[in-house]
Amino acid sequence: MKGLLWLLGLFAAAVAVTLAARNPGYVQLVYPPYRIEISLTLFVLALLAVFVLGYLLVRLTAAAVQFPVQVRAFREERLASKGRAAMMESLKAYFEGRFAAAEKAAVRAMELGEKSGLNSIVAARAAHELREFDRRDAYLASGEGKTVGESTMRLIAKTEFMLDQKKPQSALNSLKELNDTGMHKHIGALSLELKAQQQAHNWDAVLEVMAQLEKRNAIDKVVATQLRQQAWLEKLRSQGTDIATLRTLWKSVPAEFRQRAKIAAAAAEAFNRLGDCKSAQQLLTDSLNEQWDSELVALFGECRNDNNIAQIEQAERWLKQHTDDAGLLLALGKLCMHQQLWGKAQSYLDASLSLEPSRAAYSALGQLAEKLGKHEEAIAYFQKAA
Image 1 (cartoon, rainbow, N blue to C red):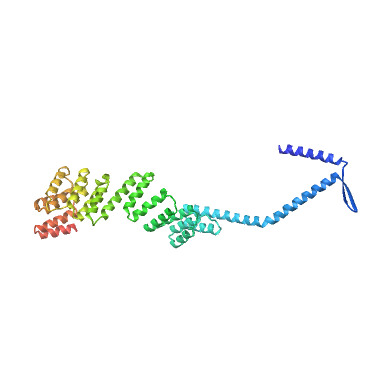
Image 2 (spheres, one colour):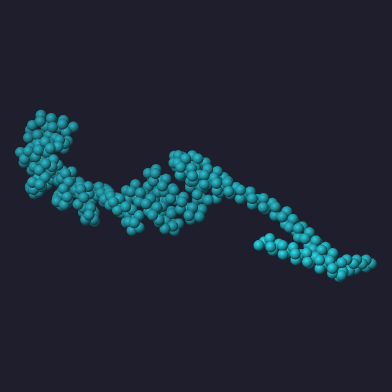
C-alpha cells in the first residue's frame, strides 16, 4: 500500500514540475538601481531550498543544544539499568542462600544509584544470616525515612531479626512503630506479634492475637488449640501468690481445657502450693472422672488434709476399674501413710513397685520405714530411690 502511495506521489510531482516548467510567469526583484527578473518556477524552487536549509539548520542547532542533556540522560539510564540488574542479582542470590553474594550485589545496586528500599532490606537480611549484626543495623538505618511500603519492609525485617535474637520487647517495639505509621496489621505482622508475645510470656496478649488470627482463618485449628492450651498452662503456673486471683483465673479457663490433664495438673499444683487442697482435690477428681490419666492421678496423692478418708475412698473406687495402674496405687499408698494406715500403705506401695518401679514409690517406702522405726530398710529404699 505504501509503495502505491509513493508511486502516485511521484506521478503527481512529475505533473507539477511539467506544468511549472511551461508556466510563462516570472518574478521581478527591484532594489534601485538593480533589477532582477527570474522565472516563477526557479523562484519557487529557490524558496523551497531556503526553507529546507533553514529547517535543517534549526534542527542541527537544537540537537547541539540538547546533546549534553541527552548524554547525561543516557548515562543515568545506563547506571539505572546496571542498578536494577544488581538488585535482581541480589534477590536471586538471597533466595538461593548465597548471602555474602546477595549482600555485595545489594550494596553495589545502592552505589549505582538504585533508589529502591528493597536493596537495603536485602542487604540487611543477608548480613543477619551471616551474623554480621553491626552491618545489618547500618543497612536498616539507611532505609529510614522512605515511603510507607519501604518502612513496612524495614520494620518487619527488624522484628524478625529481634525475634531471632530472642529480644521480644525490641520486636514488639518495632511492631508498635509499624502500627503508629497507620499501617493496618496484616497476617504476617500478627504472626510475628504472636511469636513476640510468646517469647515475652505475655500470655493474655497471646490469646488476644490468636483470636485475631483465627478470625482471618490464618492459623491452623490444631495449632491454635495447642497454643491456647500452652497460654492457659503458663498463666496457671505463673500464678503463685494470691489464692483469690488463682480461683478467679481457674473459673476463666474455658471448659474444653479444664479437663485436660496438663492444665488440671498445673492448677492442682498451684492450689496445693497455696494451701487450698480442697480445690485441688475437686478439680483432679473432675478431670479424672472425665478422662483417666495415670500421671495425673499421682498428684491426687499429694493433696493431703487432716482427714483424707474421703480421698482414699474415691481412689479405691477408681482402683476397681484401674487395678493395674501404678500411679493410682502410689497415690493410695501416700494417702494411707498420711492417715497412718501403715499396713494398707505398705500394701499399696509394694503393689505399685511390682507394676512399675519408680523413684517416688521407693522414697515413699523409705519414709514409711522411717515412721515404723525400720531405719536399715529406710536407708535401703532411699538408696534405690537415688
